[in-house]
Amino acid sequence: MDTVEEDVEEYSWRDVVLPRLISSTQERGLDREPAGERRRGRDILVAVDHGPNSRHAFHWALAHLCRLSDTLHLILAVSS
Image (cartoon, rainbow, N blue to C red):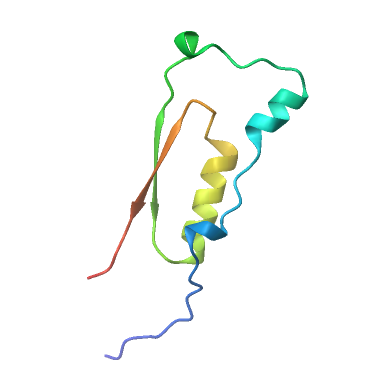
């Protein structure tokens, strides 16, 4: 059985454009909570590799799951 070579788009984390959440809330006149009163954020884990689906999963998690108080952890999957 032969291995199948697929074209894989490689990218760097530097290519990712993060949403500008903080500046957009300040423009609307919303005040941020004081540090002592801030709610504890969630830990969100996203498994990634060097494929385009991982990049999509990362962007999806940022857009649909993450709040300002959350921490997003990326788990890199490497084949042996």
